Length: 252
Image 1 (cartoon, rainbow, N blue to C red):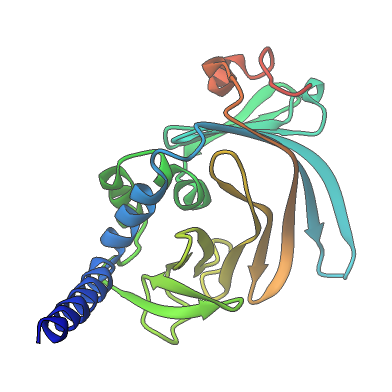
Image 2: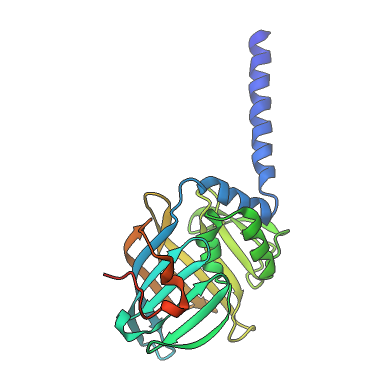
């Protein structure tokens, strides 16, 4: 009898735990919180890498160039296009992007980079900050369902099952890593823009997808391939100051 009671208690506990885990991810807010909690003490504060950027043209040809990127999380990203001496690139800092051409500012405007938010910032800032940003960008956090992506179970936030048009993001269920973003294309809302984070590599600490694909109506138009990835490198905050773009850089 005692053994029977013990077995019942164990089974009841397992069922309760399973239900509790299932109940944790009932909406996008819970998922963003879980992503943060999983890696808040084991994610990097800075990351730098060299990027091969390939543009695929409608005529079937492609062109590639080298970019150098540096991020200070949360919210700061610097891109140098080509040799730093050329003075071409951009700085994204605190919701504003500043573009540079030939060492001079060519424009500035508000910008939220959802790839930075969901692929990086979510692990290094409070869940409340991420939730506010994601809601502000029009993602419906009340909608969540499970699906599969490249053979792995995922959570999909922002759309009902079968809807591949609405704004939505996909997160791998087991590792809680961002893998896919779908939204109407900015250039033509009738078209669908999709970004994929591919080939995740484990770092010390954290993870990074070393290949990023951008597709429009399922046709690849741009690809990023990362190399020489370094995490927690010491970066001067001046790197992300638009006024110091031409005098500061991290590249070797």
